[in-house]
Image (cartoon, rainbow, N blue to C red; front, side):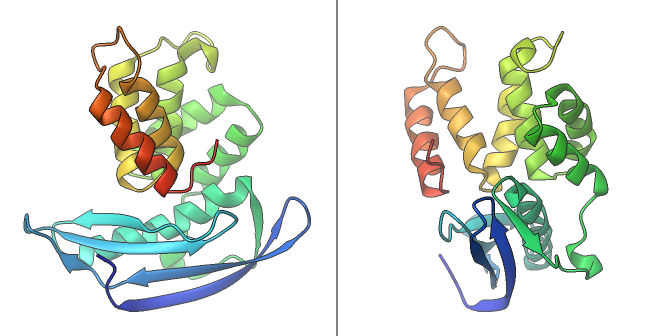
Length: 204
């Protein structure tokens, strides 16, 4: 579906092994779909290569705005792999400081803190927070003390993160849908999300 390229930016980054990386951000022109909505594709070339993401909206401006917002969130999410030098200072690419705090807590295995921070951010449609919230609801007390596993809420948040192209959310959905005994068991959906996770760069 990829359309005309309408915006591009290259950022310098340093991987944890000290190697220099170039992160190339590209956003493509929103296109109408058969159901009357719009989709805007974007990608960021990173350690795993360039994987197209897709944002949807009722009109082209909303789809484009979501893509720009997701680029910002993706740069925070990538902080688990690289350090971006001179992040864009333009307000249009600004992220909620709580999102950065959540990511730092998550990477430091302070899962209870990350979970508490994730819920209001997930409601604001920040996809990394949706992925964290869904993962915590799936594992329950295995990650967050006294948190009861809730598969319905796990699916709810993971689906939203998967719609934004978050590969680990797709992987968790594949795991949920492939688990016998759960009401959500669906081998077709499991296969679909497992494939989608790989397409989005999931390598684990």
